Image 1 (tube, rainbow, N blue to C red):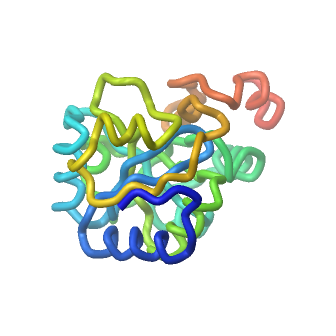
Image 2 (tube, rainbow, N blue to C red; image 1 turned 90 degrees about the horizontal axis):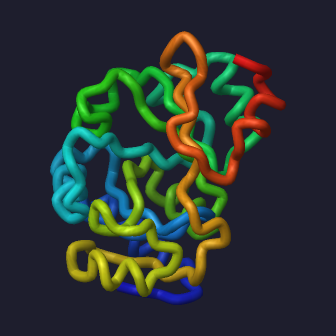
Length: 205
């Protein structure tokens, strides 16, 4: 299923696919993502296979509420401040994970990446699903992250069960990733949220 200007029916169909153990592509404000139910081990395995993603590379948990984040990760004051300042938006915060998140999602690490996309289509999809969506960019591993559905079709094609086409994503580059799992914050990937912007919220480190 590929749907330009998606309506609630197409979002509901995609949610049903994810709830049933499928994998689906959805837009975020940065790039298109491909995801699965974070608690469904078979679906997560299939996601890695479809993406040709190395098992040592963890997935990010895409969320729509802070309550969901508290269910799967330990949020300290710094994490809460960043989430309040920049989400929903193009920032991923890495924190210590809770036991409910499987090692297949985090590549055996004791941390989990929390991502809160601001895209309204994603938010409607995530709310309908009711669970965190483990996801990564919707392309074969090693290819450029896609900002439009046509690139997803060329890359993943029939490897996925659904593609929600919502046009060009506005940011076009992946989210900034900051790890809060160590003694001090570490920016692992620079995106739209800059180090300067982060330091204005949490100070120098």
